[in-house]
Length: 164
Length: 82
Picture (cartoon, helix red, strand yellow):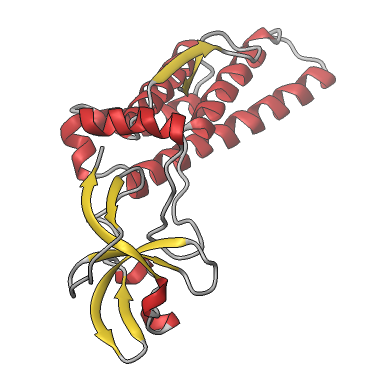
C-alpha cells in the first residue's frame, strides 16, 4: 500500500524497532480470521460426514447424524458471529475503498452461514470455505501482511489462508 | 490514539526539544514502564498532562495524573502509516 511503510516493515523485521503503546494496559482488539476459517472447514467436514451416512440409519448412525448436525449448527452460527465481529469492530471505511466488494462479500458470508446450517450441501459448504478464504486474504492485506494459501492440514479438501 | 495513529504505524520520534500542547509525545508509563504515545494537553505543576485521542479507550493523566518531565522520551515528529 504505502511503499515507505513496506520498507520500514522490512527493516523492522531485521532490526526490531521499539514498540510504543497508545491505549490502556489491556490490548483492545485482537482480530484474526483464523477462527472464521476453522468454522467453515468444520461445516464442510460435518457436511461431508453427514453425506457419507447411508439413507437408512441404525441407532448408532442416527446418533452420529445427531452429533454431526449439532456441530454443523454450532460452527455455522459461529461463522456468522465471527463475521459480525470483523465487520462491526475491525473493518473500517478505508478498507471499503481499498477493497470494493468487501461489503457484498461479508453479506454473502452471513447468508452462506445460514444456508450451510439449513442444508446438507457440499457445494454450499465449499462456497462457505471460499468466502472465509477471500475475507481472510483481505484482512491480512489490510494489515500489510501478504496472505498465503496452504493446503488444508485437516481431513477437509481445499486450503487455509495464513500470512507471511 | 485512533484515528491519528493506528496499530502498525511507524512513528519517528525526536529525542530533543520541549513538546508544545497539541503535540503527540512518547512517554514512559509511570506504572508499567512501557513506552506510550499520548497527546500533550498542557504543562502543569508536576509535569505533563497527557491524554489519548480516543478518550473512551484511553488510560492517561485523567487516571494517572500528570506525567513527570523525566518520563518524556520524545516528541512524535512523523508518522508513516500503512
